[in-house]
Image (tube, rainbow, N blue to C red; front, side):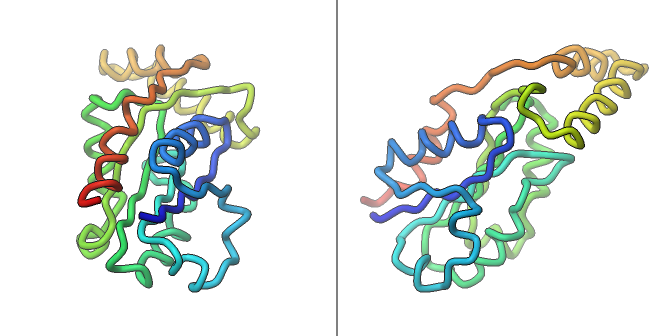
Length: 176
């Protein structure tokens, strides 16, 4: 199966996951900026297309680009991978992932989540400021759980692990 992995990454976590997926599936891998303007024939050459982007404010960055392309790629294995700073088992992840695709999109795209981390040193200033404001809001919350999350994300950390690509690889290689 010929597989394409496209990603966008701000701090490196999504790029790492995209690399792991590409390595395990022997896929071609491209940064989004290198394929954004490619025509339909480019994508038609692949049996499976994976888009990986980072989670920000409950959305996968640049996912609309992929979802627009996906409409013309029905019949292929299509995966949307969201990489975020929350642990995979967090209930907030389930809620957010339930909103990344419409009911129609779920008919032809499968969504996955991989826990990554936060690297404030690599963040662009607008993202860093938004995260710091979010952290302050959480830390001032009356809800103890939200205060704990605020403590977790007030500094850089890395909770990424190659094991989280296994469901994606299984999806992509199923039936081979």
